[in-house]
Amino acid sequence: MKADFAAAAATYDEAAVLARETGRRLAERLALVKLAPRRLADIGCATGDGVRALQEHYPQALPLAIDFARPMLQAVKSRVPFWERLRGRSPRLLNADVRALPLAAGSLDLVWSNLVLHWLDDPLQAFKDLHRVLAVGGLLTFAMLGPDTLKELRAAGATSLRKFPDMHDIGDQLVAAGFADPVMDMEMITIAYRSPRRFLADQRHLGVRDGLLGRLPWREWRRILAAWDRNASFEIVYGHAWKAEPRLADDGRAIVRFAR
Image 1 (tube, helix red, strand yellow):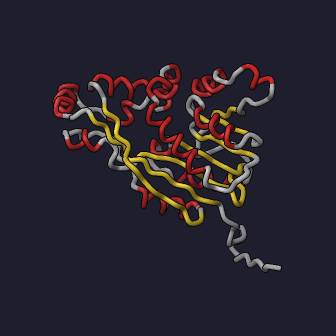
Image 2 (cartoon, rainbow, N blue to C red):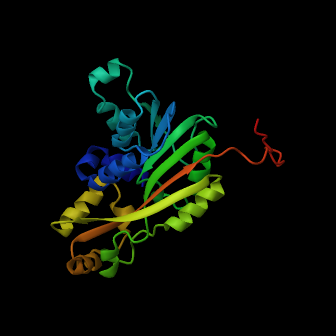
Image 3 (cartoon, rainbow, N blue to C red):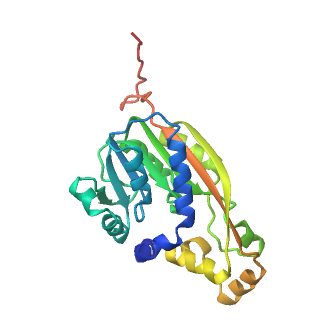
């Protein structure tokens, strides 16, 4: 999907209705958390809505925009106003894969990821590396698509849609990656489309059409879309988890702390 995301950089913003809405809701959740990060990162930043929201919320923090598609990073750069560049307010840009980030351990205080991690076949490796780069007391907050996404198309007979993990499995993976007491919740967001053509165009502009819908013969898709009611429901799984003090040393011995 890397090539699809790269090609979508020029059209992403016109179709990113869902990402903007989930980003807004992620930001509302952050407003309830007491955190003063010095260094933060938007993982899978696309054209930069998330990192800009983080900069507004935490103006003193050093922002990092990370994406594995270089054209998306160029779009982030192009959207920084000239006066913000003069003030040194441009996000630092990093072309990298979330499963192997070229960052030092403990180098971030906050990691944000909006509608990205579900594209990985197995998010566990990403969670492990995000745990590594977070400092103790750091926070991971994210939104992912859940298994009831596009349930209307499934009901109409679409058998090739991508399957997404449910929030319980994601929570288990966070614990397996070392995070403490993850908090998970979900909601459904439904978008009504004027026509199947508009729906397909939006997924193409986002760079996710083939990754989301899979591949079926066009004759089969015509039958499915004719039976579809033009509502597209997206199950949004929200999660946040903290990196706690380690309980074991690198050699496996238990760490015991005494309060003074």
